[in-house]
Amino acid sequence: MEKFNAKKIMESTLALYEDASSGMNILIIKVGALGDAILIIPSVRAIREKFPQAKIKLLTGEENRDVFINSPLVDEIIVCDFKGRDKGLGGILRIAKRLRMESFDMVIDFQNNKKSHLLSFLSCAPKRYGYDNGKLGFLLNKKVKDTKPSIGPIEHQLGILGLLGICDVDKNFALWPSREDEEWADNFLESYWLKNDMRLVAVNIGSSPRWVTKLWPVKNYIEVCDKLTKKFGIQVVLIGSEKNDPRSEEFLRRTKCKPINALGKTNIPRLACLIKRCSLLVSSDSAPIHIAASAGTPFVAFFGPTDPRRHLPPADNCIVFKKELKCSPCYHTYCAREYACMVSIKPGEVYEGILKLLGIKDINPKS
Image (cartoon, rainbow, N blue to C red; front, side, top):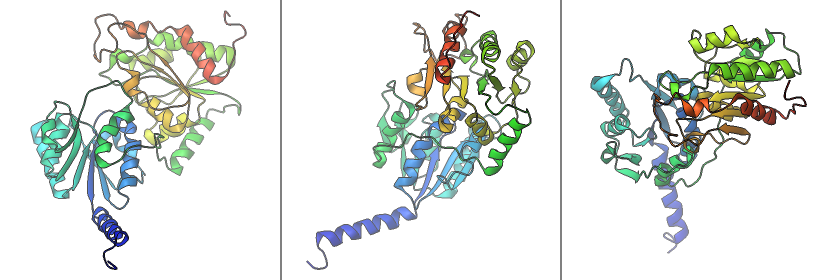
């Protein structure tokens, strides 16, 4: 009894568990869109807290690498390119070979599509976690049924985390820009000789090339931005990854607001620093709203073909514009109804929403 009382047994069991988890090798898979990669940060943090001594590696796409740059949550980033060098079955088999060499104890699949489930299986990890969603889910051996409810992205991830004994997560986002990134943002804005009290509003008029259905008309952005500058002296900061995007060129050619042009000048950490220095972001459903949530910057977001209940990042100070049409959300990348869900969002209501978030009252709205 002296050697095997309940307390000693519990202490021995905990010691054995800690010893086993300290050498654990964990792979997290998320190779989707940039915004989706940002949305798994709270879950990755929860996994790190659950297994503090484990080696955690992340399999993700090329464009998502910068999301986890300088992150203390992952030990290594494994980059894949399914549109280029890793395209097709040969690419999947090459990645699978690399994963097997890592001898992972556990794979946590937040991507949950056919490719990711296949890679989970081919990794030969003894524990493979994910959703049973009809996309080769039978290749997982630790799975939960996906009923596809309209719930938030983090709540959806909790279905998988629950299998690990994680019942709740801190929903706050965090990116990890370096001091050099912070200095770049300061120097970039200082080069425009801005007044100290000038309000900055970041504007993202683009989206993923395949998601043209998410785009709000350029003329509407021009109307809103020109009015903000004319009436309140607000400085617009145009952000985006494409320098030669036709929509951006049209905006720059027709607008009178003389925006700061940051197109193609930022990576993810620098963009986070730039958005952090703005009073507000205006954007469609794309990565910048997730970055704004991580930076604590209020934002106005446009949703049409996608459902904000499933994709909106947790944020305390935002306004979402979405029209309740029978065909929306459709999740189509094309539209036979002339983009009715986006066109029906009017510049006037967006202008009022921006003023509300900025705490500004327009005493002469008709001018």
